[in-house]
Image (cartoon, rainbow, N blue to C red; front, side, top):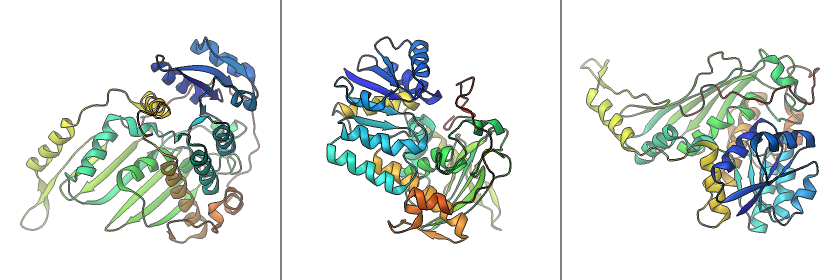
Length: 385
């Protein structure tokens, strides 16, 4: 039985608690730690974690022999420090997105995991959704032929008071806006499906959140050999449209799933290619649905990796790739240049301190609260539906 500690007791920690409960025959949540121990106790009570104790001291939790692994559900600027502490204490680590707030931090986390022989797995729960897994398999199989272009719409809506919580909306604590905290889901999926681009061009703005220093709107163009990908990120889109579209030689593959296929008339204009469309549809439907999805699926894999029966499906190196792409987007937007990957260790955008110093402060954060009166979250369209 794997002993689990939840570090942080906010809204996403409740999701982790439920997900671990899916695997109650393999694990047990034994501690919930939070800067506010009453919040930790409230989570314990609401989720019926009868074997868990509330605590306000992370070091005390990490010193416990009955804790084998931790879920880090803390503000982004604490991810690296706490993950490294946990790894050095001999604990396996599942860390929420974004993995860290800088590439130097990512590399230190990966090094600590390697030195201790422990699992470090950043959360990328949307890989574990049937539509995403099916489209990934079709891209890997090459059923549509070469990918010619990709369109990624990571479009969300958040009210102005979303940024009133004390750590959000600052470069030092959150280390970014819609790209870091929201589009990171789609960027991870894009990297998983197509790999890393060669070059990045981008622009960012803040058009609707006056209590945030960071961006709430942005567009990036990613250059791959022989193709382009466009990524739009937003926190001002009322219908929260989220989609990933891959236009291949033979037709459209997309999440949410919709396919199309065209062929040329004698003058080059298109007509529907029903045979090609039906072929793509049949291939999509032939790929089995996942038995478990989202956080429960990734946590199931994490527990198997801790037990040595499966490799981790999401590695620290993959989490780092998403951070590197976000840093390239920020560098391109600030310098008004096209950025070539990889980002070198001597680049200002390799380290959090020099990156945050270079970023614009769109607004001054003037409102700050310790906790919201409700911890419930909505997931909008949900990536993969």
